[in-house]
Length: 388
Image (cartoon, rainbow, N blue to C red; front, side, top):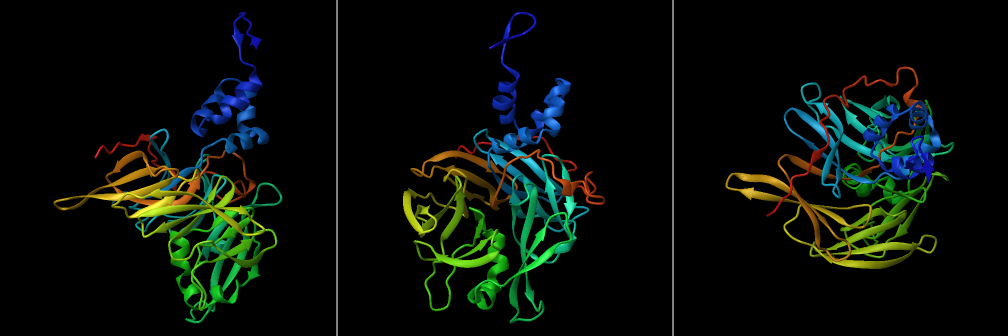
């Protein structure tokens, strides 16, 4: 242990930086830049430190809320019992809903003020995405070189035809490059599956694991309800695989870097399946948990536990919503919180990042907050307990 000039022991600076500061949320970390010039440089522009900080941030579940005055995206830190404000819009300027479309590495794609934006809430930067305005967003993902990000999106061709075909494109953020990568397999390109795709993607965003996007399983004509579409972001090709369970209640998600899914059995129990061998498509079931009723929505978290929303009814209708966090191991309730505003639990997670991205700095791309995606954000709030 090093000694200070006064003879008292102190921690080595590298230990403080790499083992303590990397664990801080972004806001208190940025305050530490005032300590000294060395820290200001490291905490502002040291790419290796900023990446290490991002990797140690928790993956927080996102929710959208709102009222007559504002629309909001918040991150839930259920372990700390906190709600962290992420994005806000003013209803007076944007009466339409604030929509969360994609998330990856601390970046969000949102629809607000009649436009698409990519933003980093930790640095309060944003850039417009006019090249893909009007397209359906399937996902955001990193690509080579490091720091490059791409958007997978699709449109129907021809756009106004009932029997139009689904065609996918890849857009490199910060460029004018929008490339066609073709159609998915025939059963996903047209017909009933293609018709319901926009609604399916909104409620069940695709899961990025091992550089591949995974769709929610669907029932194909003449086949069982266990067909999962997969897009390889490196090869830029489609294929489909079969899941180990059948039926409309299979819910895929990323679990500690692997593909997993919850299969809800009549919403009485839920089985957690994990893909153990990706190449051989070998799945194993890990847990079965007992679900608690009543409920209106379920979302798995990054650890395999489950968020559940339910409602409390009074004499004049719905009084509030209850958010429960349940253990994936035994179904016990880990925490329970009450909300007095409309709450939409999203299947997106948010890991804060202070990593710098050149596409925010391009001329006209809004390196300064040109649209009020962050104006009027409240401070971190304590989630009220629900003791009922």
